[in-house]
Length: 407
Image 1: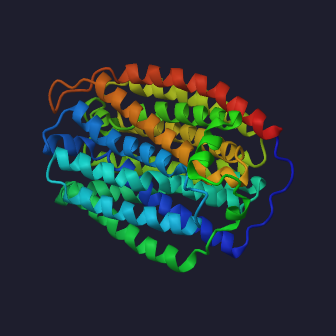
Image 2 (image 1 turned 45 degrees about the vertical axis):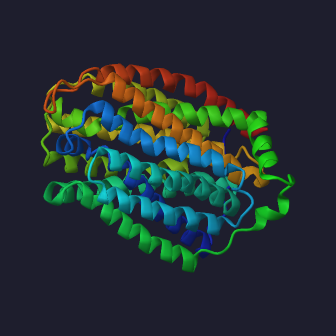
């Protein structure tokens, strides 16, 4: 599908909403993403193995997924601004408790609380985007909002690593909680109520609304594509820093540079990919990017001790390819539900994304073997091959999504 009609110009308020959603996404993504670069520090300081760290990562994902399913029936029954503020406030509290966690048990408990609230925020944001922006605008909007991913790597992760190296891994979570609290106040003041979808509701009960959302065939295809899209990425992510340090022999001082440069690449590429996906067939962009990503991750996973500049270039290529998948796929999926089902569809979609990611992280924890805290990780290449298989299947599912959107 080629998006030939010109996208309408964005109003001042729409630009403000993009900024608020992007900075909200920044904190939520950073809270989750920072677990990967802190992984090596946390495993050594808490004396936990790869399987235990995989549980800590997947605890957030599974709790977020369950929360999304439980709240899906309510997602279209309330003002989206109130929902966003409620769950974002819970996210702030959960992240604060992560900073206070004294051991592995309490860390997992805090990650569960954070996931219950944080996992729903992305779906509410996507529903707001679908409510306020035309389909022709959404690729660009998704690109800007997902810049939170890039900014978290450019600024958040390197700063978080520096702070963790100086004062311990607890402090980055405290900083995220403080920043998110300020953002919640801004949202309260600046974001207008979003209630237009309330007049379109047809089901009288929450359960009927939820069941209707799940049983629609087009919705199920969107859910399946999102779940498989998440599994592959989450397999590689949790042990990225440990692999770089213990296998590629990247130093702890080079690691922030690696994440920062990769984040800059994402920051530059995402708006460009978003604009491109508003002009070119989104499925074609996704398919080409998927094939490139599959090749790059398999090359990277087979590296042994490698010069830093080669690791840097490979990471940049990998990140750009992954972002070139996520932006068009998100824009396509957002067009599947009708307005009265957007909130519940996005909630279920986000919950499946989180649970699939948690499943991927658990698989990684089972597959990866590390004989001691300083030994190289084994079987990282196995993860790359498993991820490649899921990527190939996802191409077929996203193709079906694109056909649904064309109708």
